[in-house]
Length: 262
Ligand SMILES: [Zn+2]
Image 1 (cartoon, helix red, strand yellow):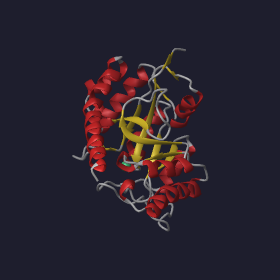
Image 2 (cartoon, rainbow, N blue to C red; image 1 turned 120 degrees about the vertical axis):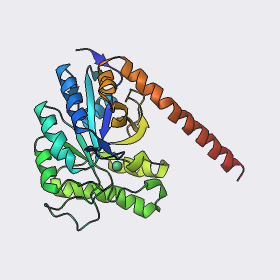
Image 3 (tube, protein in one colour; image 1 turned 180 degrees about the vertical axis):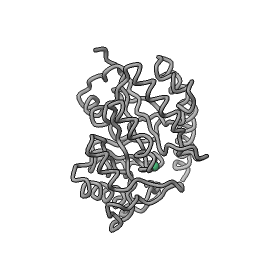
Image 4 (cartoon, rainbow, N blue to C red; image 1 turned 135 degrees about the vertical axis):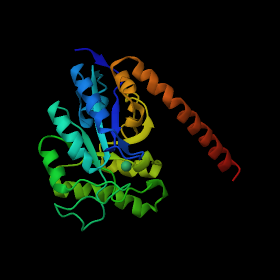
């Protein structure tokens, strides 16, 4: 089997036609996955991808990782049957809410006005091999919280999922992709890997606690989704990442200069 050095980790949120940044068209999702399936593409689980990174092994050709952030109900209603149909797996990052709010029939606290998964649905998906990761209790920007609250958001969300599902939780996703040194260090003590909002492919140079992803926003038409089948896809994502990278550099330089001058 041929191997590749660049692996896309796709990020979806909700699958519906609402005019929201977290929404992705169910029809396009169905089209995209059937196209990938027809062309022999297969999912790796996030942990399998991480294992390749740790062993410094390349990835199998035509592989990709699917992730869903927040835990919207449409992941169960729309994505789950399609994934099962094609024998694909996904990692679903859950924002679980504060303690004492975890009865099986109860839904996760609503984000962005969407309806969320309940624990029956989560458990059913777990039983057929979907992976679950932690995405905090209340979806805050962790870089803006006092240390004790940041730590509670990270470690309690992991414990709640582990208690309810009875399996260890290895993966974390930073809300809004935001982290700083303290957040990353704390996450590192509790998890095997973490996904950031850095746009790009995972490569042998990726670090386990700031894994790059490709948001579904970059696949928002038939034409863009089709690019995944071509070698242009990595060029396209690279090109999209440049403005962000420059913005980051400029911002960092500015902050550096500001701290130099007090
Ligand atoms: Zn999120």
